[in-house]
Length: 334
Image 1 (cartoon, helix red, strand yellow):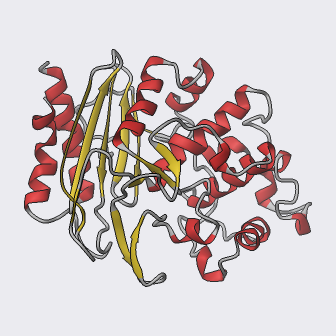
Image 2 (image 1 turned 30 degrees about the vertical axis):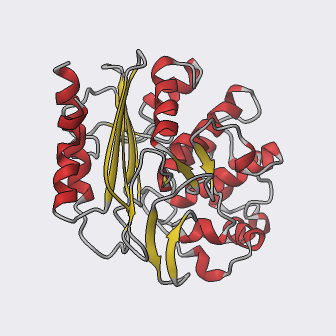
């Protein structure tokens, strides 16, 4: 089964489009399949990929960590998803309390990316003091635009979690195989970073996350394939989320977005063979996780497609849906 599902990734590896890839599949009944091939690093020294390597999960952090934390706090009654962020961050745009649009945004707005924030902002270019950069995010008058997928939404949610819990995100129990970096085991290499002037390995790839201390709401989580599959199996079996949390991540909130996740739509990253009850999320470094609740199956494709540079057409946007379709085809033949 797993060899058939891995066929698209194997082809990309053979063509030299990605250095390494790990595919993991888990069923609700506990059956699990994992395979991997290629290199964890090409430079400065070649290193073979293993099942034990840790990947920089990039924006998959948003769903495994931040979304889970926010929904858990809502379950406990410590926040209300439909209340403004200012319940947790009273100093948000504190110099314009009467007029600042940021002060009217809710937790749910940020989870569903239905805000006016820009898609990306080079926050790291304003300095590298984590406390100062958090203050910058909170006090900046953000330019307005149509709702788009924006890291700013989850940076704010991360700050809210820190404020409510009084602890960094890394204090949250995530389970084995998931950790804010540097990871406690061998890590795949990502990019030769022009800003940091070195190949990144075991340190967060996202520049804004790195400048803000390495653990933020939008990035910073590292994971092994086993750790990601354990999380996914918890969603499939219900042990990793309450019924209200599961409803939140499966129910559309804005267009094709749920609380934190995407649902299947035409042209999405999970392919078209999966059921309409499938959610997923991707990460810039070449990672992704998809959960098909109707079939009782989840899969993760972990690659280091930005190694040694992001400025190369790895074909990741075609590889992901091709892999999803191959996984479903192989699973349905079991």
